Length: 129
Image 1 (cartoon, rainbow, N blue to C red):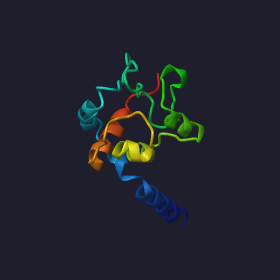
Image 2 (tube, rainbow, N blue to C red):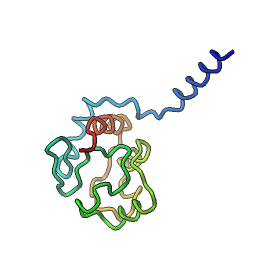
Image 3 (spheres, rainbow, N blue to C red):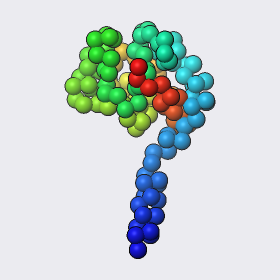
């Protein structure tokens, strides 16, 4: 009796996982080239026009605090409890200005769902330092 219940529970969890969880980090590295003008990742990452993105997946908005000069919109989102889940990052990366009006990011967004999934998978390979 327990075995069918566990199988059903495992299937529900698997089917409820977001599609972008299937990203390819290697392909995401190539997609991230579109982001490099403003953002860095890695051990020696420094803030540029945009903040470093180490540890961004799962981090609260404005996670660098005083280390980066965030827009008022980003600070308000942080105060409101925004966390950069995979879902929120996917929506933000699609159309940053629609997701958060008034943010400083001038990037128009990524249009392909697979590119978004791939870049999120890539970002997940860089933990917070």
